[in-house]
Length: 213
Image (tube, rainbow, N blue to C red; front, side, top):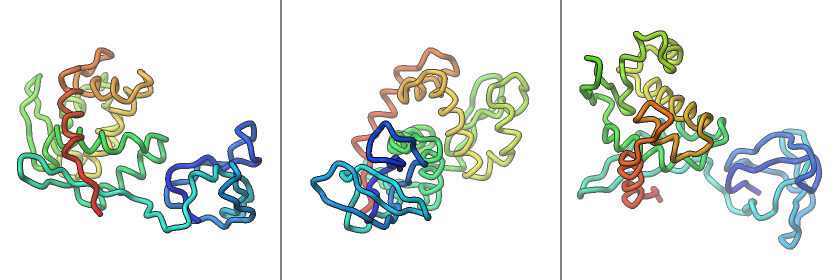
């Protein structure tokens, strides 16, 4: 069987039992004892025996990734599938996989998925790439994003570096605010006070995001 989403893999059949780890979406499991009427199913996964919620299992193969395209204004735009997988892997690792669709809308709002996009920004610096990363972060050692940019210096030309920095900035605000959408607004404002107009613009795109079949 396969997991239909991220799923806690526990030592025993109750939330009171310790979690081995979190299984990713699309993980293939060996079932030991199974009944759709039982809340918990005993499984074998990577030599560990434990329990998972039955309702999060499927007898049909579940692909580990979801792919989307944006169809807005009569034009189709989409991120390369390898980039979409990269984003999902990072968000899964951080326990934020359900932010994925909103992030795709945010990236569309920022650049229409165009890595060559350059925007004029404050301080005489530009914004670069898919996530419009402000180059001022790279020269201000007091910037909250200074060190992450030093680790991903090719953010102006490399979409993986650019996207990772964008995800990292959002995630830092998420850790500070505890809320996905508030963190989204803080991404633009750069302060703990979120930009509500930016939030509304990003969420507007959700109606035009379509899953690849």
